[in-house]
Amino acid sequence: MNEAVPTRSGFVALIGAPNAGKSTLLNRLVGAKVSIVTHKVQTTRAIVRGIATHANAQIVFVDTPGIFRPKRRLDRAMVTTAWGGAQDADIVALLVDAERGLKGDAAAILDKMPEVRQPKVLILNKVDAVKRESLLLLTAEANAKAEFERTFMVSALSGSGCDDLLDFFAKRLPEGPWYYPEDQISDLPMRNLAAEITREKLYLRLHEELPYSSHIETEKWEEKKDGSVRIEQVIYVERDSQKKIVIGRKGETLRAIGEASRKEMAEILEQKVHLFLFVKVRENWGDDPERYREMGLEFPQ
Image 1 (cartoon, rainbow, N blue to C red):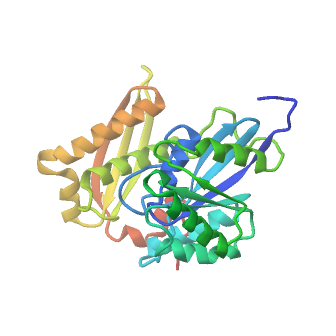
Image 2 (image 1 turned 180 degrees about the vertical axis):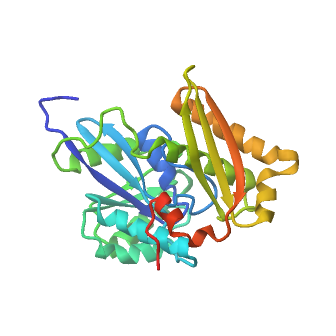
Image 3 (image 1 turned 120 degrees about the vertical axis):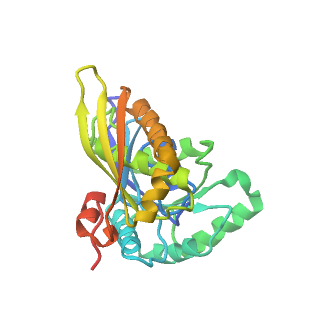
């Protein structure tokens, strides 16, 4: 860090439709995995903050849940949280999947962008899969509906265009001291991050078999004398039939989920992990205010 240059810091909210690539982009900009990424939509439930240090700036990216038309109580909580995250940020970045364009949820979000008072930027993602003419038309259409300071074209997967994004945010954020230590990459407690890792592996393994009726809690975290850590987690589902799916034939599915999760935890923690997974039925957990508090969501009435 150059001490002759004033430090800058602030919050950048990443908003967009489900599966626009917000979590992938967040991980790319931070340079480490802080948000789970799966092929399933709406996997980010609560706000996840990833911290990037670039030049003399500390950029705190706020990965919000995908904004969509809510149907259930959990859906409503996620959408409320997403817009709330945008209201508290210094800059709001709308991420659009360039392949899908401005339709459906993306169009509905764009219609609300004029109501956002903070500086706004447009980020077109997956541009490597779209022709230049289409990207220019998409840019013009979006900027005609809302006043974006800049439009960026990136590929969160390859990293193309991401350095330009970081350069812009580092110069655009207000002067001020950093909020977090220089080496910190997220404000998510490790117990929560560990639960998110297991949730990702659960989704990747089960695909469509277990939609969103699952919730994971890290119940025990014990640092051992040999430098390893013992972690106990419970996977909560709503019905016995879902419990059988998670466990699998002779426990094969649960073992596979646990092994994949344990391996990634060990890489992130840089220590040996002993992971123990349990599956329990908790009926109607989606209507339990306590579960929402644990996920960092407001309970919708």
